[in-house]
Length: 256
Image (cartoon, rainbow, N blue to C red; front, side):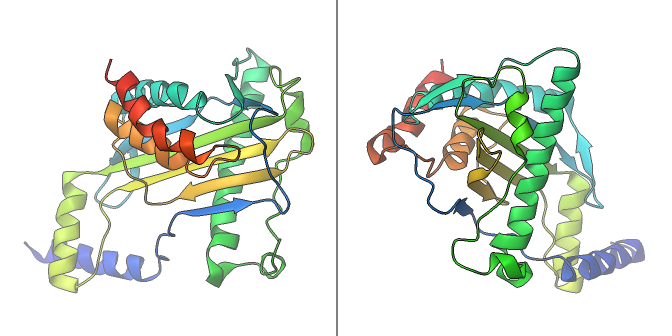
């Protein structure tokens, strides 16, 4: 390896030194929130899915084929999981025109909200003063979300976001060089996912499951099943019995 690689590894070392460690999987609930099985209608919003490669420098390079594969595989796995969540879960019917644009904005808003929860509540070192008290899980996207076409009559909206950057050859080489030359750990790949439940009466986030190091290759049916199982782990209203059968049942459906 030449000097260029050494310099690149050194730059990576500086970058990684300033980057916080990825959070372990965390789940948050609004204080006092419970969901009894068989009492609510939940609308599953169209998932936000991004799949691509991670360049040598760490940038995201989208891959349309991988994203299409992930959308199909995750769609199947979520369809199977819907019947195991303890309450009626129906798919959001994507509106047209301005309604479609507004729905996309709310999906992006949910992702930004989940990022904020991870940064300012799930990381103890970054926790805001108002989030240090017990019972301080109070986050919202606003009550206007209930006006989206297709949400009328429902109690909750379930938002799902998954982002996967698979490390490119250059990124993996950098990982080896950085470790060997600079003694620095450089990640090759990003795999994060969020699932959150929004109360449509208030717009409040009442449950969030967020993981910055998720498993499951979403480009395969089996990997998508694993991802969905992790996303919906601890979902409110799910009994221990139904949660236990969810992964195996979904694998059978995805394999057909």
